[in-house]
Image 1 (cartoon, rainbow, N blue to C red):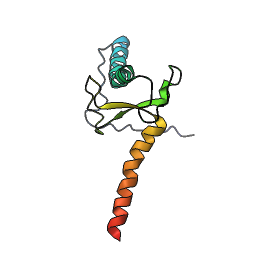
Image 2: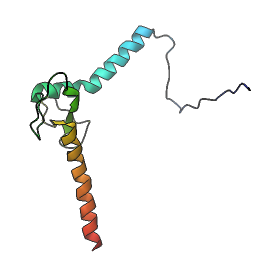
Image 3: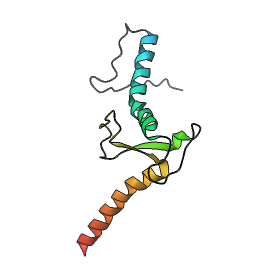
Length: 114
């Protein structure tokens, strides 16, 4: 078999690695980034409880992964500390919430055709 070498193409400015950083520093940065991304979810679960705001289903610590945070204004970057833009929805209600908008758009386009 022939030895094939593959060129890896990187976008400019992406994937920069600082060779001076230790593994522990990189791991610490990664954990901070991951925890800050999920921190609004944890805050919402504490503020609003482990219950779906739409169907009222209650969740436990074991199955809380089925409970999601819905941003009322649709902007996932709008995360006020008081939780006023969040509501906890189960995965089924969350899917229903987002599909309603798609269905309404579909129906409004259909009415314009006739």
